[in-house]
Image (cartoon, rainbow, N blue to C red; front, side):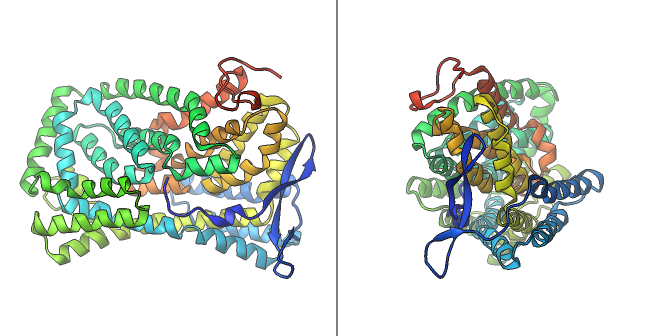
Length: 508
């Protein structure tokens, strides 16, 4: 995902200088305001039980809220933040330190918040301008049912590789593909799964992606070495996902029924909008900003401005209608339930639910980090791991667990720094660690409802994360391939062969 500047608070002094068990892992430091140099944090280190307690209690609250009460995850995460703070205070942590962690973590969401707001405005204005309706019309005309799902995944993958942003792909192209899928009578959860599989494939291996650059930097490996070593887990996952999508695409409804439904959708859209080549001006502008390497926030904003101009000039919308689409989204009132469901989307206000969730989730992660819970868990885990297979498995599960309990960038940073020496002790190259971080954190981010990735996809596509997660095949197949290579010894980059994955098994 490309979400602006990197969260600097996550870099705060995780320095490898404390021996634990077989491996040397890092301890968290903070800067002394008096001396101007790094000194150890005065916060007491929790026991493993103490570190797991706030996470376990919060996860229990989340499970009850989501699965039993069918409610949103906001309140459990707020309660979890309070539980973490209270346990930390009882253990002797200073409230000032905990508050600093909460505020600093929440502050990192500001660039993400602006992207969310702009994506909401993009959805509303691109529908009003006729851009999304034209994409839907062309899609239902050219794409057959049996080919739709694999084509959907492949197109999203290509765009995400080119742009380096899964969020941008989901918020623009993904929206149109969801509408096309609905007109072909394909369940929204399956279409959303194909969009997510493709978008996160591209995000993971694109040299333009923030997460790709970030994980390589944290692990201490070259960017292109990192990307090369992602192929053994990422490409097989995508190919297998495409095969599954091809089977699913032909299993739901008949081609003739879908063709008739799609034709009806195209006729209605043509009657509602002036659909011509000029309505493609907004995506052309976005493409130009990508080529010129314009940062995400101004780039997306220019796409919104372009759509507003098209809505005014081509569709004949008023300034009030354009402003309302930016604020509240486009509202369709044709009397056709299917068309109204396709087009009533977007707007700045539609993203507020997601934005509040991101801020709360980051605050929870900040409290866990400042009270030492996350570091303790990794430290204790390292003492129990023996050999390469166990180490890679432990690192993969740790990054996923941190992603589940906090946020993707926390899941990259703390395990990335604390596992580095352990991987080196087993003669594993830094690229082995960076791959595990991507498989465990990047690919799981859109599958977790309270994670920024899952919250964004749910808000943009209108499908709950728990509904589309089972169909985002590439996202959960990649970690399985990572485990397969770890336990068979194939495709494991070592210090002796750090420029590429080993072609055969290595056992030490």
